[in-house]
Length: 251
Length: 314
Image (cartoon, rainbow over all chains, first blue to last red; front, side, top):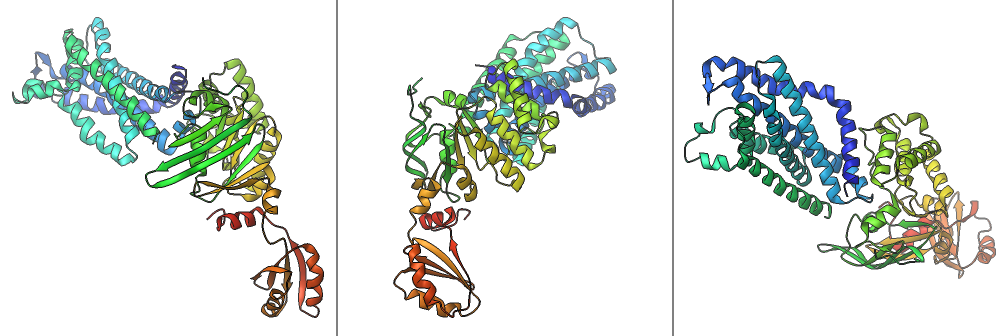
């Protein structure tokens, strides 16, 4: 069943391996700049947030943001490019693999991109800043990063499937994806929101992802309900991605 | 699986219809393509060729009717069919981010081929297509002809039983076109080739049988010669005049054995009932400023024009 997915994923990894070094500069530059500007520059003005220095507060979120952004970007652009520009999706579809295998491959590739780039940014932040965490927290943090990257990868597949114009993809990223990430408590605690807004923000799967990931990495507090929320959402979005992709290609 | 055990035809289409809203892209289409033949599908743009090929390659579902490839139903045996077919689509669908060899390896894996088998097969095909020396290069550094040859190699990798070629030589230089033709000739008999083309000389050169379609319907079919023989008007001669073409055209038009006349510049194309009528024509033109009289061979373009009322590229 997954033969086709593995073949396409393997192709995507060849391309990633070839472009890894050049991509890393761009991937690391953005979160690192934010970290240096906010975490270091603003640290003395902000002080402690939820009992930890501000630079420590935002670090897990920046790693998570890099991972999910990379997962989303890889899936959305890869799918759009292969479908609309290179017509490689069409060439896959005349081989004996199913449409679901193509979607799974693209989700796997987005997920791998997210994981590799997230880990890379984590390593850079760990190396050049005083951000430290107990190693045992890392395993639990990855439990959040895996469904989180999968969720954004599936969202990327949906956008890459239904959007035919590249500018629309850019708009969705600017108007929907980035605000969703920033609103989920990446730079500030949820308690900063007005009381009536907090339940709505808490209901977002991105909040579960960013809050859960931060709490487990910084404080070692594992919130099962957050992980469940992210995982269930990822599963639902995956089902939607496969359905939408199949439907679009049958048109 | 729902395959016929010993299918007589490589491709069998019965009452196939495809509707896009109000538009009927395929209308009660019937077709039989014998195994091992080279089959040509001709039609002007919008005739329904691409729709038919997309249904046969399982990329699209028909509205009604039945289509079978090697006995497998396109609606229920898509995976079995895709294992048996190779497809060269109109678009260049090569992956420009991986090398030529990696493109072939990817498709071998998608077809579930074993590495030992596909490595040998890729070497053979790259050699055959004259691409061995460029196998580690990205396809976008190739010329159009080389890219097309790579697409053909990719379609042949898993040794398909039916090869679909959707306008395989569009945009190629004459030399590359000839190379693709030579290859298609070389595989004749070993697999069924289903070809769509805008180039009538290509269809004439390559195909055992030709189907002409328009408005989603099959208009006529046969070998190139059979189709030409069906043309009304018998034998056509072209008479080139140096002067007074109109006057002599009127004279010829009044003759009983002349079925039709067409004036093109200083020439008159005369359709005769049979070639014997030429003996009546020649004396009638005694003293006329005739430069040349030549037999005008009927072309597939003439057949196409007479059947569809338009040129193939319109």
